[in-house]
Length: 450
Ligand code: UGA
Image 1 (tube, protein in one colour):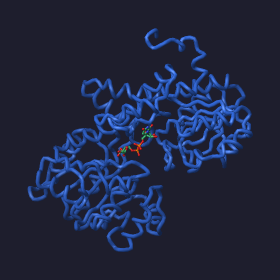
Image 2 (cartoon, rainbow, N blue to C red; image 1 turned 90 degrees about the vertical axis):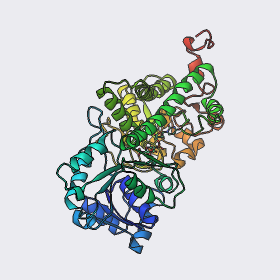
Image 3 (cartoon, rainbow, N blue to C red; image 1 turned 135 degrees about the horizontal axis):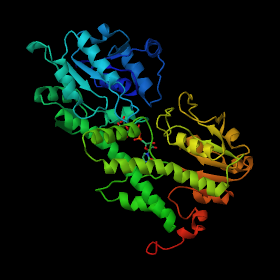
Image 4 (cartoon, rainbow, N blue to C red; image 1 turned 90 degrees about the horizontal axis):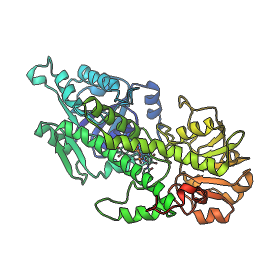
């Protein structure tokens, strides 16, 4: 059993604290937002994450888990300091490391025992080595710090499960003894330990997220080919994904990828490589395809609905995926911007009722139900695959709409059923459900003629 302090009570910090407590450690979370600390202490979990609230309650009660806004309390007599603060995207695309530096400074100032800092935050290669040498600048030999990269691979909505059943645990440090100690914190989880230097560990994180993003962009690019040839990307993805060298996951075509990680991490990698004088052609292409996917879906809708002026579109879903109230990087936001620029009025419903703050959206009507959003609409987009939107009563919904045009941007519905209900239905990657595409003369040729 180790004493672990996690700096940062965001989604990674809370999950990491609770799961370390779950593994039998004494975990303390340091969060500067006193209101958040109070609400967690009173049993309210500020994020939607299956299993986390229960886990938090259980381990707080057993005394293995606590949260505080007081750095001295959090960092006294601790053995490992984890940093799990945000590294958001700067205006130039680079990772903003200011919260990280602040956290390291706090660790340096308040830690009376531990000299081991483990970075969970996603940081550019070389960051841990740089922090370590900064920390050790004036340190006495017995006070020397080690900064370890121990990246997280937690997907929102299944973060507890991902922590407890990892595909691998990556530990980056040139100090083999400390690497072993950090890897030991994950005992008894059954996962390969990838023990590497810190720059390699930092790169693993960027490469993993970027590879997943490009896998999705790739299938979205092929999905446009399927529309052209009159076939369906679902069938193609099944055939491709069964190659064990490729694998079936992250081959779901749709609206493209979003979230708080893929967009910022691919931007940071692009920026980092450019600053190093290197090209990031593949990552940049993945980003470009992702931007293009929004335009592609908007074009498809405009073709089906006709010019926008005065027409209303129901946007069913706003978050970057279902199961979260997170709007960061959601592809639905640029889709709304584009449709609004085309003259459509947008009526939005999202089951998580996300709070609209600085999302740089045009004025939209936020509705209390999908029915309200659909009422009088000339078209609808299923933009996030929330179960309640997928299982909506589309038979009666059709009668609320001015025109029964539906784009299933998540490919979550049954095309046959929707068509039988009288919808003019299309979904990305399905050339069989997009007759309007075949009407375009340049799209009727065969592949070889194209
Ligand atoms: C992602 C990674 O999956 C985690 O491993 C990583 O730790 C995390 O980022 C992070 O860096 O913190 P997350 O952003 O929660 O996790 O979301 P994902 O489930 O990976 O989905 C990302 C986006 O891709 C979503 O918009 C999702 O709808 C989209 N997606 C996913 C597809 O369009 N198609 C797919 O086949 C899979």
